[in-house]
Length: 136
Image 1 (cartoon, one colour):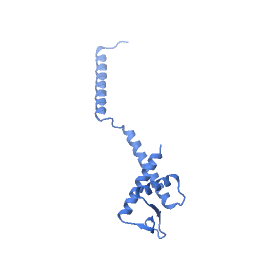
Image 2: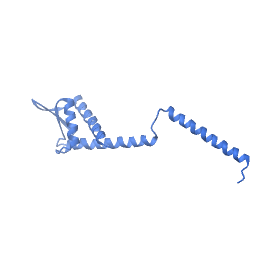
Image 3: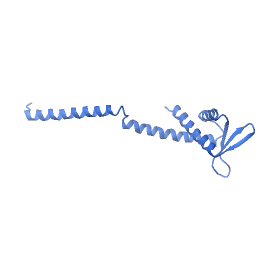
Image 4: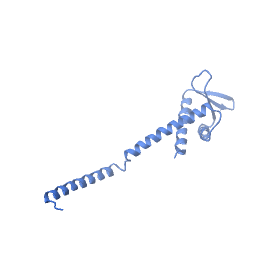
């Protein structure tokens, strides 16, 4: 095989440029501080979306069904522990928004206003954490 010196120089110059670019890219990645590759970010976004969808189903199950799954029971127990009282969630027959009823020694009381918002927000966060914790 006979190679001219010009071809060898061109090949070595191209190889040198590739090495320089690879070193720059490695320094850039290191400067980014271990930022996750884009495919991991996409995977995490898909997982987050799936966790939210399942948490939504858990909350619907909590409200609609009288049979409690282990996850629903765990969510309700944590909610009860957090607020110090037991809550019952149900939809009214007229098709309105979900009713939250707090069980107290004086009897059941409907929850509304800012407390209702706090209970619903806490319910959502607990459901998200339970689902996320149980997913592989």
